[in-house]
Image (cartoon, rainbow, N blue to C red; front, side, top):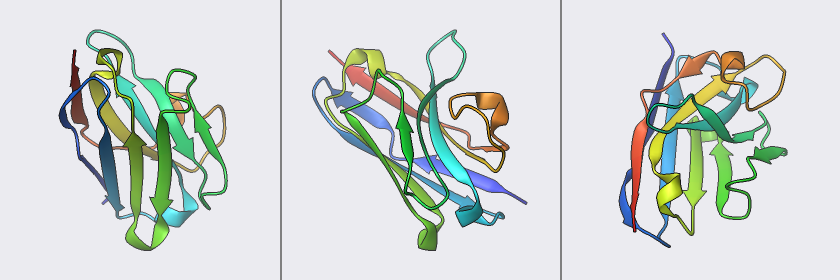
Length: 124
């Protein structure tokens, strides 16, 4: 049974940093591309970042490029998101997701496995 668990969310002030972590089990982690999505209140999930199975290729949304950094450790079945220069517009529930199929990285429907999410709140 596949299980994806996020951690690391919390409350931070504007300009602060957080590091999200995600651990997956029950799948061949290093065969999957993995990504982070976020969901604002009342909105659909949007892609934040994705990293290819080998870690050599990464993608970012324009809104986080230059502030967030995605990385993975296949030996630990883990994915990370380093978030810097946070602002209130980053406040959302953040989800980790894994996929084997192709297509645009930011399309949530292409991901097979999802975590329950971790809340990030940035105060002004």
